[in-house]
Image (cartoon, rainbow, N blue to C red; front, side, top):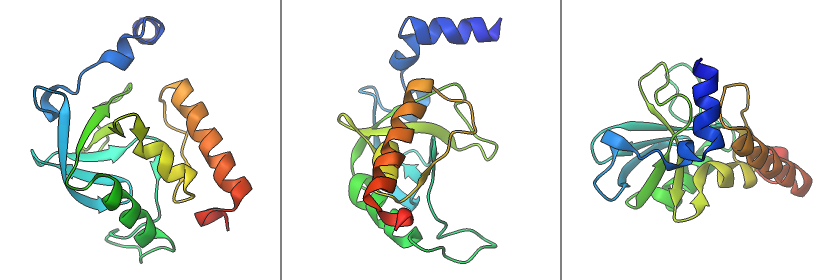
Amino acid sequence: MLALIGWGLKHYGILDQLQPGTVSDASGQNLVVRVVDGDTLVLGNDERVRLIGVDTPETKHPTKPVEPLGPEASAFTKRAVEGKQVTLRFDREKYDRYQRVLAYVYVGDWCLNEELIRAGLSECVTRYPFDASMKRRFREAESEARAARRGIWR
């Protein structure tokens, strides 16, 4: 039954129209007040957002050292969204096990998740369930980064 509902939401384009709900203002915009690392943000209402399909090298892990290209991934995300209004788009799961909001983060039509992968600052992570068309976009961005030998693919 849940699979059928999910199919209906996706098939009729409803999934793409879901509004950010409690994590945004009335316009659907969200102020990013801080970048924790390349794949985690903090909004103006103190909600933490984890980017779907992205896993940048660690910079703030409590038990791991800073990984190669972690600072670059953090800097990329900071330049792209810190202090800016963004739009969040959600998928099947709205929260991860740490209660962070799971989202695709957009500045206009530009998708931060996809561009981190395209820049070679993250692998495309598709082992979790999320929209097939986004997985395809992310895989294409990773293929482009690999072919160009960007970032982690050098």
